[in-house]
Image (cartoon, rainbow, N blue to C red):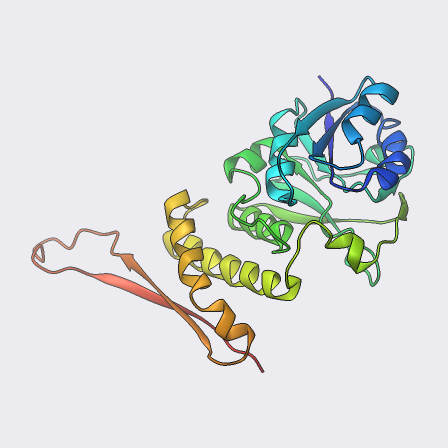
Length: 272
C-alpha cells in the first residue's frame, strides 16, 4: 500500500494537467488519482491512453464544477493513509512528497503559506482518518464558496493542528486569468464567496457550542436555507445579516423538569 494518494481534479484544465501529472507520477511511494469532472477537453481519454497507472475517476453530466464533490470522489478511491490534494495547475518537484515532514504522534494537516499571486490555498495534505472523521469536503458548497477554508476550519475544530508547508518544492503554479478560473462557476463569485463564509461561520459557531465534530446534513441545509434568505440584501448593502441559532440545553436539571433551558448565539455580518 502506498503512503500517499495524490488526488487532482480536472474541469477544463487539461493543458495544465499535461504539465503537472508527469510530476505527480514521479513521487515515490504514491498512487495518483485523477478525477475527470465532466471535463470538456477529453481528460479521461488522455489519462487512460498516456498514463495507464493512474487511477481514473470519470464523472459525467456535471456542467458546473463542484470541487467538494470532485475531491471527495477522488478520496473515496484512495488507498493511502495520507491524502495529498493538489490542483491541476500545481507543478511539483520530483521529490516533493519526500520533502514533507509531519510531527509524529500529532493530529496534523498540511497547508501552504499564502503568498501573493499563487493559488496554493486549495492544495493540502491530510491524514485519511482525520479527513473521514469530519466527512471530507462539504458538498453543499457548490460554487466558489471556500470549500478549502471550510475543510481546514473543521479539521481545526476536530483537534488537528495546521503544519505550514514550504513552497521550495513547488516548481510552478500555472498562471490563469479570471475567465479560466471561474469558467465553470458562473455568477457573481464574490457573492458566492460571501455565502460560503457566512455558512462556514455559522457552522463553526454551532460546532463549538455543541462540542461536535460534524453536523447533520439536515442541519447544514437548514443553515444554508436561512443564509440564502438574506445573502442578496447583505451583498447589495441593503440590510445587515443576522442569524440566531438556538441550542437545547444538554444537561438534566434535577427537580426542574417542568422548565426548558436553551442557549442562543447570533452570527452577524454587515457591508462597510
